[in-house]
Image (cartoon, rainbow, N blue to C red; front, side, top):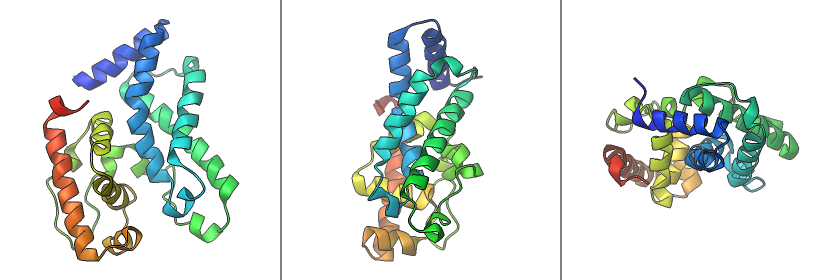
Length: 207
């Protein structure tokens, strides 16, 4: 059976297709955090000096809004996959526009890799010698709720989750980018994961 959140999105999809402009606006607003998080994972640190992930989000949502009539899917999964496809195309365009070092482009996570197919699939603890958090992240299936939960984290917690779990960087690299020691980053990550678990366990507190 579809989850409550999926039923809400499907209902908004159906109403939007019927010409309900308010439903369409609500549909896109509910997906904004999700698209933003996926965009953030596709924009490496070296690119963020040239490209703001919010630009990708705006462009993606604008194109999806304009091309809404072309969406033929029926489920939440198909809807999110359609948004990711538009985002991926836009990301490729940005990369091509700002490419200056092909070797660094090669370090990007492939846009069509299995990991980019779903945010939740990225939340399996990357191999490392650090502590393993609760399996709640691996078992989390509701991508919209997960994206909204991540946006509720503090800036440092959100950053370490994105770098470690979404971009799947080793702790040494996360520490370098955050300009902290590895032990400090590992502790920060554990606290961020615990806070995220708390938010996910209390959906009534999520917006």
